[in-house]
Image (cartoon, rainbow, N blue to C red):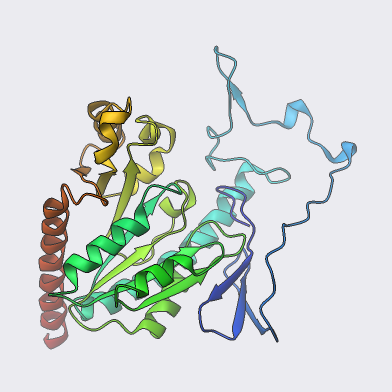
Length: 315
Protein backbone atom coordinates (compact mmCIF):
# COMPACT_ATOMS: atom_id res chain seq x y z
CA UNK A 1 0.00 0.00 0.00
CA UNK A 2 0.98 3.62 -0.33
CA UNK A 3 1.66 5.01 3.14
CA UNK A 4 1.17 8.55 1.90
CA UNK A 5 -2.52 8.24 1.17
CA UNK A 6 -3.44 4.65 2.01
CA UNK A 7 -4.23 3.56 -1.55
CA UNK A 8 -3.95 -0.16 -2.26
CA UNK A 9 -1.23 -1.68 -4.40
CA UNK A 10 -4.04 -2.58 -6.77
CA UNK A 11 -3.82 -3.86 -10.30
CA UNK A 12 -2.12 -1.98 -13.11
CA UNK A 13 -3.29 -2.59 -16.65
CA UNK A 14 -1.35 -1.22 -19.58
CA UNK A 15 -3.49 -0.97 -22.66
CA UNK A 16 -2.86 -3.72 -25.19
CA UNK A 17 -0.98 -5.84 -22.68
CA UNK A 18 -2.26 -9.36 -22.08
CA UNK A 19 -0.35 -9.45 -18.81
CA UNK A 20 -1.75 -7.80 -15.72
CA UNK A 21 0.58 -6.45 -13.08
CA UNK A 22 0.24 -6.33 -9.32
CA UNK A 23 2.86 -4.07 -7.74
CA UNK A 24 3.60 -4.79 -4.11
CA UNK A 25 4.64 -2.20 -1.56
CA UNK A 26 8.31 -3.12 -1.87
CA UNK A 27 8.22 -2.61 -5.64
CA UNK A 28 7.99 -6.30 -6.52
CA UNK A 29 6.00 -6.81 -9.73
CA UNK A 30 3.78 -9.87 -10.11
CA UNK A 31 2.41 -10.53 -13.59
CA UNK A 32 -0.29 -12.91 -14.76
CA UNK A 33 -2.67 -13.22 -17.69
CA UNK A 34 -6.45 -13.13 -17.64
CA UNK A 35 -8.58 -14.99 -20.17
CA UNK A 36 -10.92 -12.01 -20.43
CA UNK A 37 -11.30 -8.53 -19.06
CA UNK A 38 -12.85 -8.54 -15.65
CA UNK A 39 -15.20 -5.81 -14.42
CA UNK A 40 -14.21 -3.37 -11.74
CA UNK A 41 -15.51 -4.30 -8.33
CA UNK A 42 -15.35 -2.23 -5.17
CA UNK A 43 -12.71 -3.44 -2.74
CA UNK A 44 -14.13 -5.35 0.22
CA UNK A 45 -13.01 -3.89 3.50
CA UNK A 46 -13.00 -6.24 6.44
CA UNK A 47 -14.22 -4.86 9.73
CA UNK A 48 -11.69 -4.23 12.46
CA UNK A 49 -12.65 -5.81 15.78
CA UNK A 50 -12.98 -3.29 18.60
CA UNK A 51 -10.11 -4.84 20.54
CA UNK A 52 -7.76 -4.17 17.59
CA UNK A 53 -8.54 -0.46 17.49
CA UNK A 54 -5.77 1.83 18.73
CA UNK A 55 -6.31 3.60 22.00
CA UNK A 56 -6.28 7.34 22.29
CA UNK A 57 -2.77 7.07 23.72
CA UNK A 58 -1.57 5.48 20.46
CA UNK A 59 -3.23 8.12 18.28
CA UNK A 60 -0.54 10.34 16.66
CA UNK A 61 -2.94 13.21 15.94
CA UNK A 62 -1.96 16.69 17.12
CA UNK A 63 -4.90 18.73 18.37
CA UNK A 64 -4.93 22.49 17.85
CA UNK A 65 -6.77 25.28 19.61
CA UNK A 66 -9.50 25.31 16.96
CA UNK A 67 -10.31 21.66 17.70
CA UNK A 68 -8.81 20.28 14.48
CA UNK A 69 -6.87 17.01 14.43
CA UNK A 70 -3.64 16.96 12.42
CA UNK A 71 -2.13 13.64 11.35
CA UNK A 72 0.71 15.08 9.30
CA UNK A 73 3.06 16.27 12.03
CA UNK A 74 4.96 13.01 12.61
CA UNK A 75 8.22 12.07 10.82
CA UNK A 76 6.24 10.23 8.13
CA UNK A 77 3.95 13.19 7.50
CA UNK A 78 0.98 10.81 7.50
CA UNK A 79 -0.82 8.13 9.50
CA UNK A 80 -1.71 4.52 8.75
CA UNK A 81 -3.48 2.34 11.32
CA UNK A 82 -1.24 -0.43 12.64
CA UNK A 83 2.02 1.18 11.47
CA UNK A 84 4.38 3.23 13.57
CA UNK A 85 5.91 6.43 12.21
CA UNK A 86 9.26 4.64 11.89
CA UNK A 87 7.73 1.78 9.93
CA UNK A 88 5.96 4.22 7.61
CA UNK A 89 9.15 6.15 6.98
CA UNK A 90 11.05 2.95 6.11
CA UNK A 91 8.30 1.72 3.78
CA UNK A 92 8.09 5.06 2.01
CA UNK A 93 11.88 5.23 1.66
CA UNK A 94 11.90 1.76 0.09
CA UNK A 95 9.08 2.56 -2.32
CA UNK A 96 10.30 6.00 -3.34
CA UNK A 97 13.94 4.88 -3.50
CA UNK A 98 13.14 2.17 -6.01
CA UNK A 99 10.86 4.52 -7.94
CA UNK A 100 13.54 7.24 -8.10
CA UNK A 101 16.01 4.75 -9.57
CA UNK A 102 13.56 3.82 -12.31
CA UNK A 103 12.74 7.50 -12.90
CA UNK A 104 16.44 8.25 -13.38
CA UNK A 105 16.53 5.57 -16.07
CA UNK A 106 13.49 7.09 -17.79
CA UNK A 107 15.03 10.56 -17.60
CA UNK A 108 18.32 9.41 -19.13
CA UNK A 109 16.49 7.62 -21.96
CA UNK A 110 14.43 10.72 -22.72
CA UNK A 111 17.39 13.09 -22.46
CA UNK A 112 19.47 11.04 -24.88
CA UNK A 113 16.73 11.45 -27.49
CA UNK A 114 15.82 15.09 -26.85
CA UNK A 115 12.29 14.16 -25.80
CA UNK A 116 10.51 16.68 -23.58
CA UNK A 117 8.33 14.89 -21.03
CA UNK A 118 5.80 16.87 -19.00
CA UNK A 119 3.82 15.38 -16.13
CA UNK A 120 0.39 17.05 -15.92
CA UNK A 121 -1.22 16.74 -12.49
CA UNK A 122 -4.44 18.09 -11.00
CA UNK A 123 -7.69 17.30 -9.24
CA UNK A 124 -10.31 15.40 -11.25
CA UNK A 125 -12.28 17.73 -13.51
CA UNK A 126 -9.69 20.48 -13.88
CA UNK A 127 -9.77 20.18 -17.67
CA UNK A 128 -6.49 18.32 -18.25
CA UNK A 129 -7.75 16.21 -21.15
CA UNK A 130 -9.36 19.17 -22.92
CA UNK A 131 -6.12 21.07 -22.37
CA UNK A 132 -4.14 18.19 -23.86
CA UNK A 133 -6.35 17.93 -26.92
CA UNK A 134 -5.97 21.63 -27.72
CA UNK A 135 -2.23 21.51 -27.00
CA UNK A 136 -1.74 18.53 -29.32
CA UNK A 137 -3.69 20.21 -32.10
CA UNK A 138 -1.44 23.26 -31.81
CA UNK A 139 1.84 21.36 -31.49
CA UNK A 140 1.58 18.43 -33.85
CA UNK A 141 1.80 20.60 -36.95
CA UNK A 142 5.46 21.17 -36.08
CA UNK A 143 6.54 18.51 -33.57
CA UNK A 144 5.55 14.86 -32.91
CA UNK A 145 3.47 14.43 -29.75
CA UNK A 146 2.76 11.23 -27.78
CA UNK A 147 0.57 10.87 -24.70
CA UNK A 148 0.43 8.57 -21.68
CA UNK A 149 -3.01 8.59 -20.07
CA UNK A 150 -3.40 7.58 -16.43
CA UNK A 151 -6.78 6.71 -14.88
CA UNK A 152 -8.00 4.16 -12.40
CA UNK A 153 -10.31 2.66 -15.04
CA UNK A 154 -11.52 3.09 -18.68
CA UNK A 155 -9.75 4.22 -21.85
CA UNK A 156 -12.05 7.17 -22.55
CA UNK A 157 -9.33 9.81 -22.35
CA UNK A 158 -6.89 7.85 -24.54
CA UNK A 159 -9.62 7.55 -27.16
CA UNK A 160 -10.14 11.34 -27.08
CA UNK A 161 -6.40 11.85 -27.55
CA UNK A 162 -6.14 9.35 -30.42
CA UNK A 163 -8.95 11.21 -32.20
CA UNK A 164 -6.45 14.06 -32.67
CA UNK A 165 -4.10 11.70 -34.52
CA UNK A 166 -1.54 11.57 -31.69
CA UNK A 167 -0.42 8.16 -30.38
CA UNK A 168 -1.73 7.55 -26.86
CA UNK A 169 -1.37 4.71 -24.39
CA UNK A 170 -3.81 4.17 -21.54
CA UNK A 171 -2.59 2.99 -18.14
CA UNK A 172 -5.28 1.90 -15.68
CA UNK A 173 -3.99 1.89 -12.12
CA UNK A 174 -6.82 -0.04 -10.45
CA UNK A 175 -6.94 1.00 -6.80
CA UNK A 176 -3.71 2.96 -7.25
CA UNK A 177 -4.01 6.74 -7.22
CA UNK A 178 -0.95 7.75 -9.25
CA UNK A 179 1.38 6.74 -12.05
CA UNK A 180 4.89 5.63 -11.14
CA UNK A 181 8.20 5.41 -12.97
CA UNK A 182 7.84 1.70 -13.72
CA UNK A 183 4.49 2.25 -15.45
CA UNK A 184 5.89 5.10 -17.53
CA UNK A 185 8.94 3.04 -18.45
CA UNK A 186 6.67 0.32 -19.81
CA UNK A 187 4.69 2.97 -21.69
CA UNK A 188 7.89 4.31 -23.28
CA UNK A 189 8.67 0.83 -24.58
CA UNK A 190 5.24 0.57 -26.21
CA UNK A 191 4.87 4.13 -27.50
CA UNK A 192 8.50 4.49 -28.66
CA UNK A 193 8.27 8.29 -28.97
CA UNK A 194 10.56 9.63 -31.71
CA UNK A 195 13.56 11.81 -31.04
CA UNK A 196 12.90 15.52 -30.48
CA UNK A 197 9.24 14.88 -29.69
CA UNK A 198 6.98 15.94 -26.81
CA UNK A 199 5.64 13.34 -24.37
CA UNK A 200 2.64 14.53 -22.38
CA UNK A 201 1.74 12.45 -19.32
CA UNK A 202 -1.74 12.93 -17.89
CA UNK A 203 -1.50 11.63 -14.36
CA UNK A 204 -4.39 10.24 -12.35
CA UNK A 205 -6.63 13.03 -11.03
CA UNK A 206 -5.26 13.46 -7.51
CA UNK A 207 -3.34 16.25 -5.77
CA UNK A 208 -1.68 14.04 -3.16
CA UNK A 209 0.42 11.02 -4.19
CA UNK A 210 1.51 12.10 -7.70
CA UNK A 211 3.53 14.84 -5.99
CA UNK A 212 5.86 12.26 -4.46
CA UNK A 213 6.46 10.06 -7.50
CA UNK A 214 9.05 11.15 -10.03
CA UNK A 215 8.31 9.70 -13.47
CA UNK A 216 11.47 10.93 -15.17
CA UNK A 217 9.72 14.04 -16.49
CA UNK A 218 11.38 17.36 -17.19
CA UNK A 219 8.73 19.17 -15.15
CA UNK A 220 5.48 18.72 -13.29
CA UNK A 221 2.72 21.02 -14.50
CA UNK A 222 -0.11 21.45 -12.00
CA UNK A 223 -3.47 22.45 -13.45
CA UNK A 224 -5.80 24.42 -11.17
CA UNK A 225 -9.20 25.37 -12.56
CA UNK A 226 -11.09 28.47 -11.44
CA UNK A 227 -14.06 26.23 -10.63
CA UNK A 228 -12.03 24.99 -7.66
CA UNK A 229 -11.19 26.99 -4.56
CA UNK A 230 -8.35 29.49 -4.71
CA UNK A 231 -7.05 27.96 -1.47
CA UNK A 232 -6.20 24.60 -3.13
CA UNK A 233 -2.44 25.34 -3.10
CA UNK A 234 -2.52 25.68 0.70
CA UNK A 235 -4.71 22.60 1.16
CA UNK A 236 -2.49 20.42 -1.07
CA UNK A 237 0.91 22.11 -0.75
CA UNK A 238 3.14 19.18 -1.75
CA UNK A 239 1.85 19.18 -5.31
CA UNK A 240 2.33 22.91 -5.81
CA UNK A 241 5.76 22.70 -4.20
CA UNK A 242 6.78 19.94 -6.63
CA UNK A 243 5.50 21.72 -9.77
CA UNK A 244 7.49 24.04 -11.98
CA UNK A 245 4.42 25.60 -13.62
CA UNK A 246 0.82 26.21 -12.59
CA UNK A 247 -1.77 26.50 -15.34
CA UNK A 248 -4.80 28.40 -14.10
CA UNK A 249 -7.45 26.92 -16.38
CA UNK A 250 -11.06 27.76 -17.31
CA UNK A 251 -10.49 31.50 -17.05
CA UNK A 252 -13.37 32.01 -19.49
CA UNK A 253 -15.66 31.21 -16.54
CA UNK A 254 -14.29 33.93 -14.25
CA UNK A 255 -17.18 36.37 -14.94
CA UNK A 256 -19.57 33.81 -13.46
CA UNK A 257 -17.56 32.86 -10.38
CA UNK A 258 -16.22 34.38 -7.17
CA UNK A 259 -12.74 32.95 -7.72
CA UNK A 260 -9.99 35.34 -6.59
CA UNK A 261 -7.15 34.94 -9.10
CA UNK A 262 -4.63 37.06 -7.19
CA UNK A 263 -5.21 35.05 -4.01
CA UNK A 264 -4.79 31.74 -5.83
CA UNK A 265 -1.45 32.84 -7.28
CA UNK A 266 -0.30 34.30 -3.95
CA UNK A 267 -1.19 31.08 -2.11
CA UNK A 268 0.64 28.97 -4.71
CA UNK A 269 3.75 31.12 -4.46
CA UNK A 270 3.59 31.04 -0.67
CA UNK A 271 4.19 27.30 -1.06
CA UNK A 272 6.59 27.59 -4.01
CA UNK A 273 8.06 31.08 -4.59
CA UNK A 274 9.67 29.97 -7.86
CA UNK A 275 6.42 28.65 -9.35
CA UNK A 276 5.64 29.97 -12.81
CA UNK A 277 1.98 30.77 -13.58
CA UNK A 278 0.06 30.98 -16.84
CA UNK A 279 -3.63 31.86 -16.98
CA UNK A 280 -5.51 30.25 -19.85
CA UNK A 281 -8.70 28.67 -21.10
CA UNK A 282 -8.53 25.30 -22.84
CA UNK A 283 -12.01 26.00 -24.22
CA UNK A 284 -11.56 29.49 -25.68
CA UNK A 285 -7.83 29.32 -26.33
CA UNK A 286 -7.08 32.46 -24.33
CA UNK A 287 -3.55 32.36 -22.93
CA UNK A 288 -2.48 29.47 -25.14
CA UNK A 289 0.29 31.42 -26.85
CA UNK A 290 2.04 31.76 -23.49
CA UNK A 291 1.58 28.03 -22.76
CA UNK A 292 2.97 27.01 -26.15
CA UNK A 293 5.89 29.41 -25.75
CA UNK A 294 6.66 27.82 -22.36
CA UNK A 295 6.72 24.38 -24.00
CA UNK A 296 9.02 25.66 -26.74
CA UNK A 297 11.41 26.99 -24.08
CA UNK A 298 11.46 23.58 -22.37
CA UNK A 299 12.08 21.91 -25.75
CA UNK A 300 15.10 24.16 -26.22
CA UNK A 301 16.36 23.00 -22.82
CA UNK A 302 15.87 19.38 -23.93
CA UNK A 303 18.00 20.06 -27.01
CA UNK A 304 20.77 21.41 -24.81
CA UNK A 305 20.61 18.24 -22.71
CA UNK A 306 21.05 16.13 -25.85
CA UNK A 307 24.21 18.03 -26.74
CA UNK A 308 25.45 17.61 -23.17
CA UNK A 309 24.79 13.87 -23.30
CA UNK A 310 26.54 13.59 -26.67
CA UNK A 311 29.52 15.56 -25.41
CA UNK A 312 29.73 13.38 -22.34
CA UNK A 313 29.62 10.25 -24.47
CA UNK A 314 32.42 11.49 -26.66
CA UNK A 315 34.55 12.20 -23.59
